[in-house]
Image (spheres, rainbow, N blue to C red):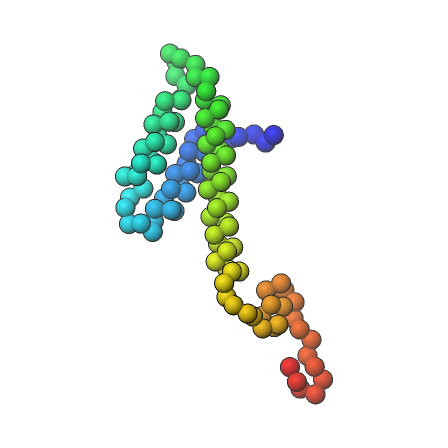
Length: 110
């Protein structure tokens, strides 16, 4: 299993995803319930000198998994926008999508 990295890096990644998602809504991401819940969960599970939080690794794993989900959904949406729903394409356009170039026919056709 790969290392999780630091909890702060995971938190920053999730907050960046929240900023990206709320950029379209017009409302600041810090006013959302998701931001308040995320910050409360990370604050409740931090390690202090007075207590040892046994659930910190569990929270960090869940947060890293959620961050992976957010990134994957964003990448899927970008791919979906690029390749879906453009109707029927010409053979030249399809060849260009996959990096090929159609051969030229002799006699100037095509």
